[in-house]
Image 1 (tube, rainbow, N blue to C red):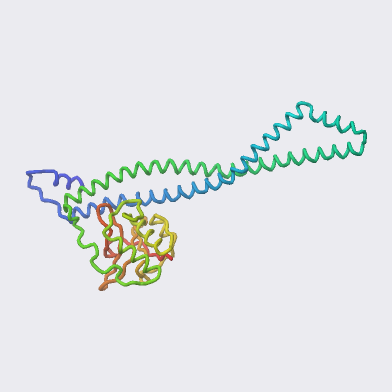
Image 2 (cartoon, rainbow, N blue to C red; image 1 turned 90 degrees about the vertical axis):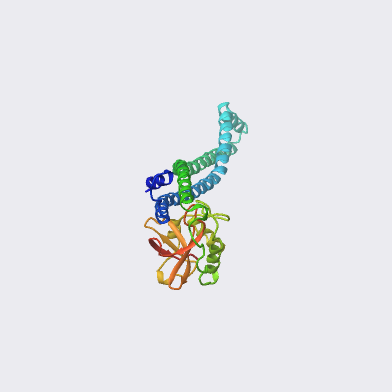
Length: 315
């Protein structure tokens, strides 16, 4: 359909019927459903990378004092070895022997052996501890390298996504002009009913963002993507959620449709690439507020206009 639309829009002087707004909107929705899973995957990779880097930083902090102690211990070993190489033990024994007292000589030799034994044991403990931490850090370093590579790939995909979004916006403008063709952003009260408490705080925040632009990977305050809006709304209520629809689904309890109250989350599609906030039932129709896609401001929509996967309740 894209090629057909482009041909119709780009051809002048030919008697081709202009595509209807419904056809344009259907194609935009189709393309956006291809783009949004990549955006949510990008958010998931970013969350994982931040977590793994935090682990690496924590291990590095553990290693720092041990590395310093190993360095100092090695310096002392060097001094001790140099001393022994230059005849330190022989000099020490001669000094002991010069006392002429066999009891004193025995005690001093015993003390020297104890100090040496303790010193060697301490070196072994330090080196073993560092080796253990190095070993635990090795897979983490490999994971971070892998995630870095994945992040680079994701950034390249995001660049392509931006190109796709630009094309979608151009299609939208060609079909509707600057008016947007979306109709009223708040066709019913938002929220329909005010539940109070944390739910009330979250849903009121989400409703207050209506009209702001969709920008992928953003969680406010001036723009949002789908999971960025629900994350920011519930953070306002004191509940922390990850910036990813699928991760949000995993982080909160599942509820049934009959249990829905304004502020609950509605998850869409089998791969969970979209999330919205339930705004309530008005004249028998359930409504959501959500960040849908690029070029469309945050708005309300009938909840059942899309394949619903499940419902969840933060808090």
